[in-house]
Length: 363
Image 1 (cartoon, helix red, strand yellow):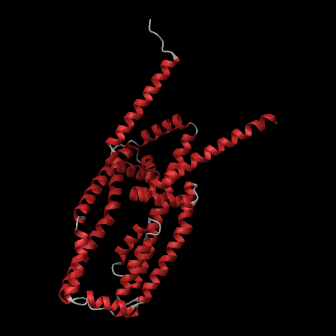
Image 2: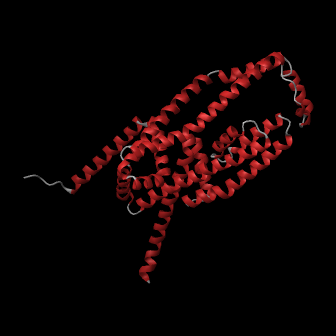
Image 3: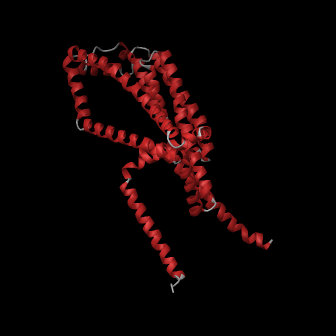
Protein backbone atom coordinates (compact mmCIF):
# COMPACT_ATOMS: atom_id res chain seq x y z
CA UNK A 1 0.00 0.00 0.00
CA UNK A 2 1.35 3.39 -1.06
CA UNK A 3 1.66 5.81 1.81
CA UNK A 4 -0.15 9.10 1.21
CA UNK A 5 1.98 12.21 1.72
CA UNK A 6 1.16 14.16 4.84
CA UNK A 7 0.42 17.92 4.74
CA UNK A 8 3.89 18.65 6.11
CA UNK A 9 5.41 16.45 3.40
CA UNK A 10 3.45 18.24 0.67
CA UNK A 11 4.49 21.61 2.10
CA UNK A 12 8.13 20.52 2.06
CA UNK A 13 7.75 19.41 -1.56
CA UNK A 14 6.30 22.77 -2.54
CA UNK A 15 9.15 24.59 -0.81
CA UNK A 16 11.72 22.36 -2.52
CA UNK A 17 10.07 22.85 -5.91
CA UNK A 18 9.92 26.62 -5.45
CA UNK A 19 13.56 26.71 -4.31
CA UNK A 20 14.62 24.67 -7.33
CA UNK A 21 12.66 26.94 -9.64
CA UNK A 22 14.19 30.10 -8.15
CA UNK A 23 17.69 28.63 -8.34
CA UNK A 24 17.29 27.51 -11.94
CA UNK A 25 15.75 30.87 -12.83
CA UNK A 26 18.67 32.80 -11.36
CA UNK A 27 21.13 30.51 -13.11
CA UNK A 28 19.29 30.98 -16.42
CA UNK A 29 19.43 34.76 -15.97
CA UNK A 30 23.17 34.54 -15.33
CA UNK A 31 23.65 32.38 -18.45
CA UNK A 32 21.61 34.63 -20.71
CA UNK A 33 22.63 38.00 -19.24
CA UNK A 34 24.27 39.05 -22.52
CA UNK A 35 21.04 38.51 -24.44
CA UNK A 36 18.56 39.99 -21.96
CA UNK A 37 18.70 43.47 -23.60
CA UNK A 38 17.90 41.87 -26.97
CA UNK A 39 14.96 39.97 -25.46
CA UNK A 40 13.65 43.16 -23.85
CA UNK A 41 13.97 45.05 -27.14
CA UNK A 42 12.12 42.25 -28.94
CA UNK A 43 9.33 42.32 -26.33
CA UNK A 44 9.03 46.13 -26.56
CA UNK A 45 8.82 46.04 -30.36
CA UNK A 46 6.29 43.18 -30.25
CA UNK A 47 4.09 45.14 -27.82
CA UNK A 48 4.36 48.27 -29.96
CA UNK A 49 3.33 46.61 -33.21
CA UNK A 50 0.84 44.15 -31.70
CA UNK A 51 -2.37 45.99 -32.78
CA UNK A 52 -1.23 46.09 -36.41
CA UNK A 53 0.13 42.56 -36.26
CA UNK A 54 -3.09 41.19 -34.76
CA UNK A 55 -5.05 42.85 -37.54
CA UNK A 56 -2.76 41.30 -40.14
CA UNK A 57 -3.14 37.87 -38.50
CA UNK A 58 -6.93 38.10 -38.60
CA UNK A 59 -6.82 39.03 -42.27
CA UNK A 60 -4.23 36.44 -43.34
CA UNK A 61 -4.45 33.60 -40.76
CA UNK A 62 -2.63 31.16 -43.02
CA UNK A 63 0.60 33.16 -42.81
CA UNK A 64 0.89 33.46 -39.05
CA UNK A 65 3.52 30.73 -38.74
CA UNK A 66 6.08 31.82 -41.33
CA UNK A 67 5.65 34.71 -43.67
CA UNK A 68 3.76 37.20 -41.46
CA UNK A 69 6.43 37.17 -38.71
CA UNK A 70 9.12 37.16 -41.40
CA UNK A 71 7.69 40.25 -43.14
CA UNK A 72 7.17 42.07 -39.83
CA UNK A 73 10.75 41.34 -38.73
CA UNK A 74 12.19 42.50 -42.05
CA UNK A 75 10.15 45.72 -41.92
CA UNK A 76 11.45 46.48 -38.42
CA UNK A 77 15.00 45.82 -39.61
CA UNK A 78 14.45 48.16 -42.56
CA UNK A 79 12.95 50.82 -40.29
CA UNK A 80 16.10 50.78 -38.16
CA UNK A 81 18.72 50.32 -40.87
CA UNK A 82 17.36 52.85 -43.39
CA UNK A 83 18.04 55.96 -41.22
CA UNK A 84 21.43 54.55 -40.22
CA UNK A 85 22.30 54.03 -43.89
CA UNK A 86 21.27 57.60 -44.71
CA UNK A 87 23.43 58.88 -41.86
CA UNK A 88 26.45 56.82 -42.94
CA UNK A 89 26.12 57.97 -46.57
CA UNK A 90 25.83 61.62 -45.51
CA UNK A 91 28.79 61.24 -43.14
CA UNK A 92 30.88 59.64 -45.89
CA UNK A 93 30.13 62.55 -48.19
CA UNK A 94 31.12 65.02 -45.52
CA UNK A 95 34.27 63.11 -44.62
CA UNK A 96 35.87 63.97 -47.96
CA UNK A 97 35.12 67.67 -47.53
CA UNK A 98 36.33 67.55 -43.94
CA UNK A 99 39.61 65.90 -44.96
CA UNK A 100 40.26 68.61 -47.59
CA UNK A 101 39.46 71.31 -45.02
CA UNK A 102 41.82 69.75 -42.45
CA UNK A 103 44.60 69.46 -45.01
CA UNK A 104 44.19 73.12 -45.98
CA UNK A 105 44.09 74.16 -42.31
CA UNK A 106 47.30 72.26 -41.53
CA UNK A 107 49.02 73.85 -44.54
CA UNK A 108 47.80 77.43 -44.18
CA UNK A 109 46.21 77.79 -40.75
CA UNK A 110 42.68 78.94 -39.99
CA UNK A 111 41.87 82.55 -40.70
CA UNK A 112 39.89 84.26 -37.99
CA UNK A 113 36.20 84.53 -39.00
CA UNK A 114 34.55 87.93 -39.12
CA UNK A 115 31.83 86.93 -36.64
CA UNK A 116 34.39 86.53 -33.83
CA UNK A 117 34.53 90.31 -33.52
CA UNK A 118 30.78 90.36 -32.75
CA UNK A 119 31.04 87.94 -29.83
CA UNK A 120 31.37 88.88 -26.16
CA UNK A 121 35.03 88.98 -25.04
CA UNK A 122 36.00 89.35 -28.70
CA UNK A 123 39.53 90.56 -27.90
CA UNK A 124 40.34 87.54 -25.72
CA UNK A 125 38.89 85.13 -28.27
CA UNK A 126 40.73 86.82 -31.10
CA UNK A 127 44.02 86.65 -29.21
CA UNK A 128 43.57 82.93 -28.49
CA UNK A 129 42.69 82.33 -32.14
CA UNK A 130 45.80 84.09 -33.38
CA UNK A 131 48.03 82.19 -30.97
CA UNK A 132 46.57 78.72 -31.57
CA UNK A 133 44.80 78.52 -34.94
CA UNK A 134 45.93 81.30 -37.26
CA UNK A 135 49.28 79.68 -38.13
CA UNK A 136 49.89 76.25 -39.73
CA UNK A 137 51.98 75.20 -36.74
CA UNK A 138 49.29 76.16 -34.22
CA UNK A 139 46.53 74.45 -36.18
CA UNK A 140 48.58 71.26 -36.57
CA UNK A 141 49.39 71.25 -32.84
CA UNK A 142 45.72 71.66 -31.81
CA UNK A 143 44.60 68.97 -34.26
CA UNK A 144 47.22 66.53 -33.00
CA UNK A 145 46.05 67.11 -29.43
CA UNK A 146 42.40 66.50 -30.30
CA UNK A 147 43.19 63.46 -32.42
CA UNK A 148 45.47 61.99 -29.74
CA UNK A 149 42.93 62.44 -26.94
CA UNK A 150 40.23 60.83 -29.07
CA UNK A 151 42.19 57.92 -30.47
CA UNK A 152 44.00 56.88 -27.27
CA UNK A 153 42.07 53.73 -26.38
CA UNK A 154 38.85 54.96 -27.99
CA UNK A 155 39.19 53.28 -31.38
CA UNK A 156 39.22 49.83 -29.81
CA UNK A 157 36.31 50.77 -27.54
CA UNK A 158 34.28 52.04 -30.50
CA UNK A 159 34.95 48.82 -32.40
CA UNK A 160 33.83 46.67 -29.46
CA UNK A 161 30.67 48.69 -28.93
CA UNK A 162 29.82 48.49 -32.60
CA UNK A 163 30.30 44.72 -32.65
CA UNK A 164 28.29 44.28 -29.45
CA UNK A 165 25.39 46.39 -30.71
CA UNK A 166 25.38 44.51 -34.02
CA UNK A 167 25.08 41.20 -32.15
CA UNK A 168 22.30 42.57 -29.93
CA UNK A 169 20.42 43.93 -32.95
CA UNK A 170 20.69 40.64 -34.83
CA UNK A 171 19.52 38.60 -31.86
CA UNK A 172 16.68 41.10 -31.29
CA UNK A 173 15.39 40.37 -34.79
CA UNK A 174 15.65 36.61 -34.21
CA UNK A 175 13.81 36.88 -30.88
CA UNK A 176 11.17 39.15 -32.43
CA UNK A 177 10.47 36.59 -35.15
CA UNK A 178 9.79 33.84 -32.60
CA UNK A 179 7.77 36.14 -30.34
CA UNK A 180 5.51 37.02 -33.25
CA UNK A 181 5.25 33.43 -34.46
CA UNK A 182 4.28 32.13 -31.02
CA UNK A 183 2.29 35.25 -30.09
CA UNK A 184 -0.97 33.55 -29.03
CA UNK A 185 0.80 30.91 -26.95
CA UNK A 186 2.95 33.47 -25.15
CA UNK A 187 -0.05 35.67 -24.32
CA UNK A 188 -2.06 32.71 -22.97
CA UNK A 189 0.83 31.50 -20.81
CA UNK A 190 1.49 34.99 -19.42
CA UNK A 191 -2.19 35.42 -18.56
CA UNK A 192 -2.28 32.09 -16.70
CA UNK A 193 0.96 32.85 -14.86
CA UNK A 194 -0.24 36.34 -13.94
CA UNK A 195 -3.48 35.02 -12.45
CA UNK A 196 -1.68 32.31 -10.47
CA UNK A 197 0.90 34.69 -9.04
CA UNK A 198 -1.12 37.90 -8.56
CA UNK A 199 -4.74 36.76 -8.63
CA UNK A 200 -7.22 39.29 -9.98
CA UNK A 201 -4.44 41.89 -10.23
CA UNK A 202 -2.54 39.84 -12.83
CA UNK A 203 -4.58 41.02 -15.80
CA UNK A 204 -4.42 44.64 -14.66
CA UNK A 205 -0.65 44.48 -14.21
CA UNK A 206 -0.22 43.04 -17.71
CA UNK A 207 -2.55 45.64 -19.19
CA UNK A 208 -0.69 48.42 -17.39
CA UNK A 209 2.64 47.13 -18.71
CA UNK A 210 1.35 47.15 -22.29
CA UNK A 211 -0.15 50.63 -21.90
CA UNK A 212 3.08 51.94 -20.43
CA UNK A 213 5.22 50.65 -23.28
CA UNK A 214 2.87 51.93 -25.97
CA UNK A 215 2.37 55.28 -24.24
CA UNK A 216 6.13 55.70 -23.89
CA UNK A 217 6.66 54.86 -27.56
CA UNK A 218 3.98 57.38 -28.57
CA UNK A 219 5.32 60.04 -26.24
CA UNK A 220 9.02 59.58 -26.97
CA UNK A 221 9.46 58.05 -30.42
CA UNK A 222 6.56 59.60 -32.29
CA UNK A 223 6.90 63.01 -30.63
CA UNK A 224 10.67 62.87 -31.24
CA UNK A 225 10.11 62.14 -34.91
CA UNK A 226 7.66 65.04 -35.05
CA UNK A 227 10.18 67.41 -33.45
CA UNK A 228 12.86 66.28 -35.89
CA UNK A 229 10.56 66.80 -38.90
CA UNK A 230 9.54 70.29 -37.75
CA UNK A 231 13.11 71.34 -37.05
CA UNK A 232 14.35 69.88 -40.35
CA UNK A 233 12.01 72.32 -42.14
CA UNK A 234 13.39 75.26 -40.16
CA UNK A 235 16.98 74.02 -40.70
CA UNK A 236 16.28 74.08 -44.43
CA UNK A 237 14.75 77.57 -44.32
CA UNK A 238 17.61 78.93 -42.18
CA UNK A 239 20.26 77.46 -44.47
CA UNK A 240 21.79 75.02 -41.98
CA UNK A 241 24.12 72.59 -43.77
CA UNK A 242 22.63 69.10 -44.27
CA UNK A 243 19.18 69.84 -42.83
CA UNK A 244 17.90 66.28 -43.46
CA UNK A 245 20.72 64.62 -41.55
CA UNK A 246 20.54 67.17 -38.74
CA UNK A 247 16.77 66.75 -38.56
CA UNK A 248 17.21 62.98 -38.28
CA UNK A 249 19.73 63.43 -35.46
CA UNK A 250 17.36 65.90 -33.77
CA UNK A 251 14.57 63.31 -33.91
CA UNK A 252 16.80 60.74 -32.21
CA UNK A 253 18.04 63.22 -29.59
CA UNK A 254 14.49 64.47 -28.94
CA UNK A 255 13.49 61.00 -27.68
CA UNK A 256 15.54 61.82 -24.58
CA UNK A 257 14.08 64.74 -22.60
CA UNK A 258 16.09 67.92 -23.24
CA UNK A 259 18.36 66.04 -25.68
CA UNK A 260 17.23 68.01 -28.72
CA UNK A 261 18.69 71.22 -27.27
CA UNK A 262 22.18 69.89 -28.03
CA UNK A 263 21.31 69.62 -31.73
CA UNK A 264 19.76 73.11 -31.72
CA UNK A 265 23.05 74.43 -30.33
CA UNK A 266 25.04 72.60 -33.03
CA UNK A 267 22.80 74.00 -35.76
CA UNK A 268 23.15 77.49 -34.28
CA UNK A 269 26.95 77.18 -34.19
CA UNK A 270 26.94 76.14 -37.86
CA UNK A 271 24.91 79.23 -38.70
CA UNK A 272 27.22 81.44 -36.63
CA UNK A 273 30.15 79.99 -38.53
CA UNK A 274 28.45 81.12 -41.76
CA UNK A 275 27.88 84.59 -40.32
CA UNK A 276 24.08 84.13 -39.97
CA UNK A 277 23.87 85.16 -36.32
CA UNK A 278 20.21 86.22 -36.63
CA UNK A 279 19.16 82.82 -37.98
CA UNK A 280 21.21 81.13 -35.24
CA UNK A 281 19.24 82.99 -32.57
CA UNK A 282 15.99 82.18 -34.40
CA UNK A 283 16.81 78.45 -34.50
CA UNK A 284 17.48 78.44 -30.75
CA UNK A 285 14.19 80.25 -30.02
CA UNK A 286 12.15 78.08 -32.41
CA UNK A 287 13.74 74.91 -31.04
CA UNK A 288 13.01 75.86 -27.44
CA UNK A 289 9.38 76.63 -28.36
CA UNK A 290 8.99 73.26 -30.13
CA UNK A 291 10.60 71.40 -27.21
CA UNK A 292 8.51 73.34 -24.69
CA UNK A 293 5.25 72.40 -26.43
CA UNK A 294 6.32 68.77 -26.82
CA UNK A 295 7.70 68.27 -23.31
CA UNK A 296 5.09 70.23 -21.37
CA UNK A 297 1.88 69.42 -23.27
CA UNK A 298 2.12 66.58 -25.78
CA UNK A 299 4.37 64.12 -23.93
CA UNK A 300 2.65 64.40 -20.53
CA UNK A 301 -0.69 63.78 -22.24
CA UNK A 302 0.49 60.75 -24.22
CA UNK A 303 2.69 59.09 -21.60
CA UNK A 304 0.89 60.13 -18.43
CA UNK A 305 -2.53 59.34 -19.90
CA UNK A 306 -1.47 55.83 -20.92
CA UNK A 307 0.57 54.98 -17.84
CA UNK A 308 -1.73 56.84 -15.40
CA UNK A 309 1.38 58.33 -13.85
CA UNK A 310 2.12 61.91 -12.84
CA UNK A 311 4.66 63.24 -15.31
CA UNK A 312 7.24 63.64 -12.53
CA UNK A 313 7.36 59.86 -12.11
CA UNK A 314 7.43 59.42 -15.87
CA UNK A 315 10.43 61.74 -16.04
CA UNK A 316 12.19 59.90 -13.20
CA UNK A 317 11.56 56.59 -14.95
CA UNK A 318 12.89 57.90 -18.25
CA UNK A 319 16.02 59.62 -16.92
CA UNK A 320 16.80 56.90 -14.40
CA UNK A 321 16.26 54.24 -17.04
CA UNK A 322 18.57 55.98 -19.49
CA UNK A 323 21.26 56.36 -16.85
CA UNK A 324 21.05 52.69 -15.84
CA UNK A 325 20.18 50.89 -19.10
CA UNK A 326 20.95 53.36 -21.88
CA UNK A 327 18.44 53.68 -24.70
CA UNK A 328 16.58 50.59 -23.49
CA UNK A 329 15.81 52.42 -20.25
CA UNK A 330 13.66 54.92 -22.15
CA UNK A 331 10.96 52.25 -22.39
CA UNK A 332 11.72 50.02 -19.40
CA UNK A 333 11.87 52.86 -16.85
CA UNK A 334 8.32 54.24 -17.28
CA UNK A 335 6.88 50.71 -17.46
CA UNK A 336 8.54 49.74 -14.17
CA UNK A 337 7.33 52.95 -12.52
CA UNK A 338 3.78 52.38 -13.79
CA UNK A 339 3.62 48.83 -12.42
CA UNK A 340 5.12 49.95 -9.11
CA UNK A 341 2.53 52.71 -8.74
CA UNK A 342 -0.23 50.24 -9.68
CA UNK A 343 0.88 47.83 -6.94
CA UNK A 344 1.12 50.73 -4.47
CA UNK A 345 -2.41 51.88 -5.30
CA UNK A 346 -3.69 48.32 -4.88
CA UNK A 347 -1.97 48.13 -1.50
CA UNK A 348 -3.49 51.44 -0.36
CA UNK A 349 -6.93 50.40 -1.65
CA UNK A 350 -6.66 47.11 0.24
CA UNK A 351 -5.67 48.93 3.43
CA UNK A 352 -8.66 51.25 3.06
CA UNK A 353 -11.01 48.29 2.62
CA UNK A 354 -9.63 46.64 5.75
CA UNK A 355 -10.02 49.89 7.69
CA UNK A 356 -13.63 50.28 6.55
CA UNK A 357 -14.68 46.69 7.36
CA UNK A 358 -15.24 47.12 11.13
CA UNK A 359 -17.31 50.25 10.54
CA UNK A 360 -19.48 48.44 7.98
CA UNK A 361 -19.93 45.52 10.40
CA UNK A 362 -21.07 47.84 13.21
CA UNK A 363 -23.54 49.61 10.96
